[in-house]
Image (cartoon, rainbow, N blue to C red; front, side, top):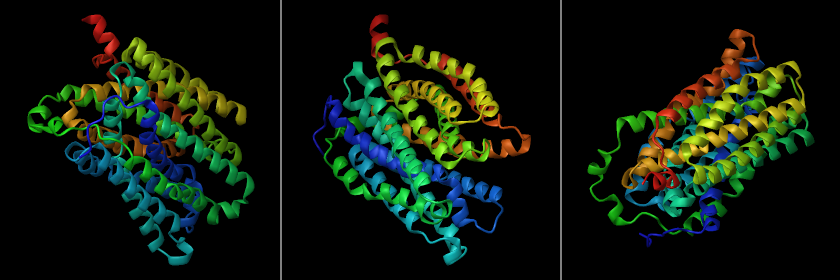
Length: 421
């Protein structure tokens, strides 16, 4: 095992984030090209049902997240954060490459959606084991007064992936015909992600380790100190952030399917999603280190609850690029301001010896049960109610749950704890 590292410079920590960005680019690109993937692998269905099958397959990728969280998260607590991050990244590379190269239904029949399913399950397993070790690493690499900023790297790099996926989708949708986008354009987007896998592996291999042998001595004794209350509140916070995040990442599909906007406009919303998220990450990281986690969580989640319905109402009444872009960027900024502070709070609350495992399991369960089903549920609710406002109500309900958890969870920011002392 490498010599444990302390207080790694933030520039070096971006090696964790870059690998994280590549993994989330690969995973989320599927969501943004859901319509095109549905046409490729489910061509015998009507368009609406093809999209439903495509979204359901996106959700299937979440089923193996808890298993990945348990296995890779536990590996991160036993062998170290770095080997766990390298393992998850390698598996994601296999999944994204296989998905990009799987022939269409027209070429190999039912084997095509079966292979699609297998590679999505592998991606889910890899990503389930990614968040715990990498977030644990960021907390352990940070000076106490900068933990919020360091963990912001986790979400910032995810959101850089959102921007990258949006730019790729926007470019392809504006330069390719609809037929070309359906046939091979979406594959090119995945292959761009696959091409940078070797670079990500090199960066992660270059990192020092933050877990020492003494950190996982007597793990059962430490595990007993992870209270059920913390587990429940952590799950509720992550549920709210994942439903909000995946609900807003559905905006690309929502703009095309519900608002009937062109694909180029819709992929522009993806870019605004990423820009808003990045702004929220940085704001949350800086503010939560200065004034505490809870004030940041509470202010952002309550503002978002107040604004989500008016934002969707504006989009449905005045559908167009300007309305969609403004609504998306504002909501995403608030969503990530809340989400980053919540993730830091949970991470600081968990003992180091089991931090990777507990974070992986909580995150994987929240995203599997709620995040992975969000886009499918939004589509089903929209069809059942005939209302384009369905996403707003679903997101608002999840945020209300998160607000309750934010009120109840204990403050963990060092600046607040010093003041109390």
